[in-house]
Image (cartoon, rainbow, N blue to C red; front, top):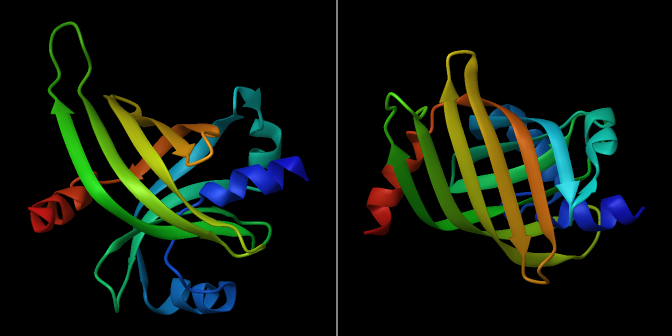
Length: 171
């Protein structure tokens, strides 16, 4: 139960309830990035078995009515998730060299809600992506306002250019 109490306060999406989200996933939600979790840590403790058993993943998406980016940490085996709006987005691009693979670092704030309890809060998110020949590898770190730290690693599906439009609109 500790896992559920701590992991899902940090899953991203907007301020809609679970029933609305379920219907919006099929109708009004456009997913841009999917972070397929292969390894997960909560304050240094391995929570990978729980995450993998629940087929958990994170995603970046928009809801058609809002035209804003959201982040969600959700499971394919149940309806529990944390979700919310992301803002203050920044992005660094590091080109591939003879000695280093290409990489990108995206940072933003996340205002989250849990659909399974009344917890709401904010977190600072950093996504580090390495571009390999086999695909894109990510490490996504969430630091909550209570300083709990969650680190997710795995394979990224989608194009990080989705952040560029939203960075431009912040200027």
